[in-house]
Length: 144
Image (cartoon, rainbow, N blue to C red):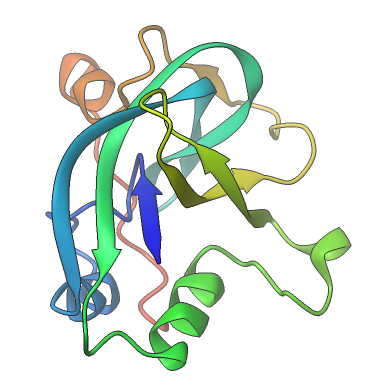
């Protein structure tokens, strides 16, 4: 299983729950996917949301390592507030999409319209946008 992470799930986030899962993932390098992202403000920082649209979203590809388990996948789903048993009420959906290179990956996409206060990210690179705006990345949800 491969993942495309474009925001707070990328390595380097200060969230300890995500760091614990990254030790069981293998970083494969930068990649892009079609779509757009918006930045959503939160008391614990900003986080991105992939939405439909023309454009390119920049992120990283990770492969599930030999120690990656169903519990790790469930933890990622919890972090993204995705419930496979109730996708209609989930904040994000985990779906299979194709990178611009043609490689299929699992990616979390926002379920529905972005919330009020969401800001489009020109260029599709969440971390570059955060740095340019001098904003803090979301670090909450330590229960993944």
